[in-house]
Length: 112
Length: 112
DNA sequence: TGCATTGTTGCCATATTTAGAAACAATTAC
DNA sequence: GTAATTGTTTCTAAATATGGCAACAATGCA
Image (cartoon, rainbow over all chains, first blue to last red; front, top):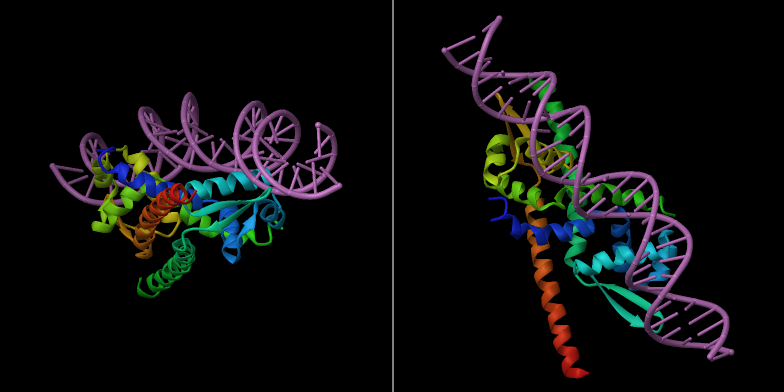
């Protein structure tokens, strides 16, 4: 195996990889509020424009956002609304997992 | 900024990072079918047990799976059902995004 | 006890990712 | 045209992730 089924997951992994950076998640949230250009995003989150551009490029390559040129500006807007649910689900997953873990620890103490 | 809001996204990013590898997505799918031990998973996907153990460790750290010792075996089972939706959503996102992109290209050709 | 099975961890070499600065490209305004 | 603004690309160094192997730990069995 190792190739047979693996191919099916590489595309999925690419999307998760695009989401696997706190700065990109922050940028996504900013863009979700309203479309923004690179310079505005870079200033808001306090990073260099080249770094912002590269992060946005990755999000675009994953099909999560889209760009539109307006003069010298390049405005990015959200393409996949599903992403928001992804992020929310991720957060919920953390909370649930921790609660379960805590409950289990407590339960074990009581039982054993 | 750069610290102010970023912290909120680091935990989310950790989850996405755990999902950002095709092998780990494959392992998750196997575990989703039914709980399995490390050696079975490693054999099924064709990787070394140490590599499998490390991947599973990452999934566990992200709160996505949980382990349970059974003699010399360590059985892993799915902890966050939300993850499955995450993966499905990721796949749908790809398809939708590509269709939109194709439609846009076609549209641009027609219009312009 | 001695041995086999199962998992985890440590180590190493390699590959990928990232940030920052500078160079470069594209557009607008003068 | 020239300068200014905005983005992208390139290059480099540092950080991180990955796979494979060996060493080690834990459990079960004879």
